[in-house]
Image 1: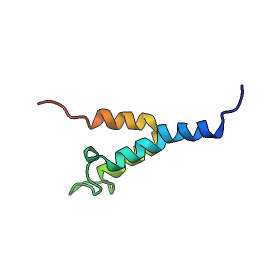
Image 2: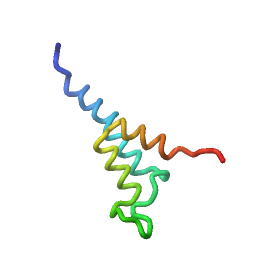
Image 3: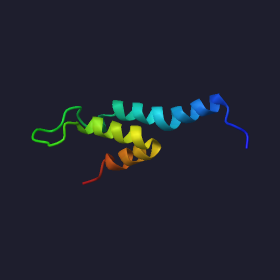
Length: 73
């Protein structure tokens, strides 16, 4: 099996790790940077989503997309 070319590796990393991080950081649906009043966690919702996407990559982004989609009603 031939090794992956560096250009293809960078494209893969950009598409499945860096692009979702940028999307979550800029998305309005990610929530606030600060935690809600009275929350026990020191992280806000947006930082929490960024940590999930950072650790889980594209799977974390899919979780973000399904967790923040607008529901009718």
